[in-house]
Structures are given as structure tokens and as C-alpha cells.
Image 1 (cartoon, rainbow, N blue to C red):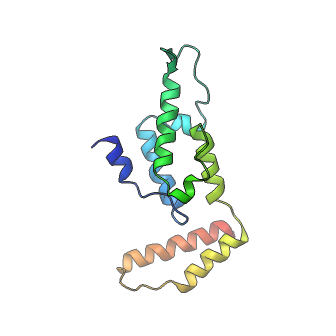
Image 2: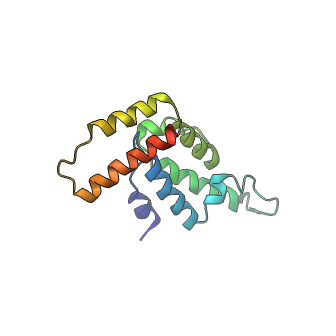
Image 3: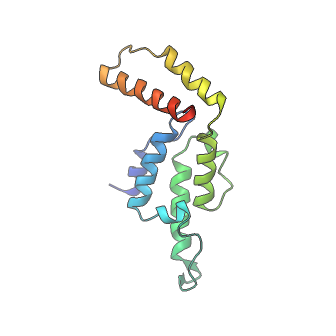
Length: 141
């Protein structure tokens, strides 16, 4: 499967799926040998990494940033569109979506209070309730 098809199979980051998105993207970037430039382990291009003016590090950083930018919704892209390096993008999104504040806690608690099984199979409904409870526990230990 081509890289663009695999990246396209990952659900785009929106206001409510950061944990799932970050898990999938991290795994994908690790598999493509791009996680080190994203998490900051490789922050600079080695001096001996120049090949016709463009180094391997720059190519890796560009690929990682492309993957991140193409797997987020347009309203999320506004926050990272001008960033150049994947670590900047990753850190910005992480800070944006993992804020542990009262407003997020109230939102998640409200979602838990109004959740209903509806047409969901019991296993999917249970997983949803469990995820909400886990998030509430993380926000308010």
C-alpha cells in the first residue's frame, strides 16, 4: 500500500479524537523511521548529512511534517500551518489537546452523563464509557 493511502487510512485529527490520532500517527511515524525527528531525539541535521545541499534529516523532517499536516482537520491545521519542524507541530498539538483544565473536565463529564447506547453494540458502548471514565480520572485524579 502506498504511503499516501496508509496515511489516508488514519482518521484526521479533530476536536475530539486526539488520543486515538496521536497513537496511530506515532506508530506510523515510528514505522517510517520519522519518530526521532518528531519527538526531538534528532533535532539537528548532522554535519556529514549533506547531499547536494539537502540532507537526509531535512527530508525526514519534511516528510514527518507533511504527514502531520495532512492528517489533521482544517481548523486544527490553522494552529500548525506555519511551523517548519515536526517537533514544533507535535508539541503544539499535544499542548492544544491535552490541557488538563476544568473546562475539559466538565465537557467530558457532560458527555458521560448524556451518553446512551442507542444502536451501538454493547462492547462498543462499554468501551466508550470506559474511555470517558479513564479521561475523567486523568483530568481529576
